[in-house]
Length: 251
Ligand code: SAH
Image 1 (cartoon, rainbow, N blue to C red):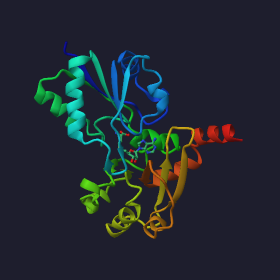
Image 2 (image 1 turned 90 degrees about the vertical axis):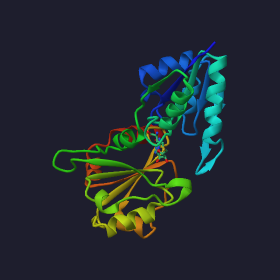
Image 3 (image 1 turned 120 degrees about the horizontal axis):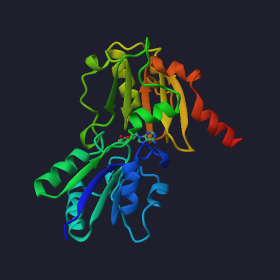
Image 4 (image 1 turned 60 degrees about the horizontal axis):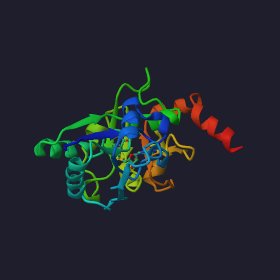
């Protein structure tokens, strides 16, 4: 029997932000290979006999190499009908979903891709920050703050500096260097920035600051977090829906 692999986005954290397609597939899956940022509540939706396989990576350090994940997919598809490769956010946004799809394609294994809600947009939304806003920002870029094998990413800072809202994923450890590069490339040192830790979950925490303060190493923040730079951060004063709800729960 040859099954099918589904490369599925699990959304940013809140289980209610799964797509209907992802939800249905999780309930039907025979095996789920999941990453580090998957909310355990989502895994509880699987049927009792579903095999759960952790294939995540700890910050930079690979628990499981990509080749091994590919090999597992190849192996499971011989045994099971529905093989679910579950990834945080969207599988094609810094999720290596493309690499897995290419591998399956090469091997002639049947697969489908189920996009997910990316943390790059949803996490700022849960912090009251729209990534675009008429009159404030007419473009945004989603950028990695982590280069290949842990190196600083190779980015054209001058062209990046011309974009309205900048959203860095995996940018916590390189935040000072990112801010310094952006100031050098012409961004206003007083521009507002926000870090949002564990977005869309009950532990969500936002830290507002300025580009200059980040460049000077004055901001403490823990991963996973979104690092967003842009004047849209100012809208948060008015659009503050989710964190208000959290405050009420915490009181
Ligand atoms: N494919 C994912 C991104 C994977 S890269 C997506 O589309 O969302 C992992 C990075 O995503 C983390 O380092 C962090 O910057 C960001 N991230 C993912 N989930 C997050 C969350 N709940 N809160 C804050 N940042 C998150």
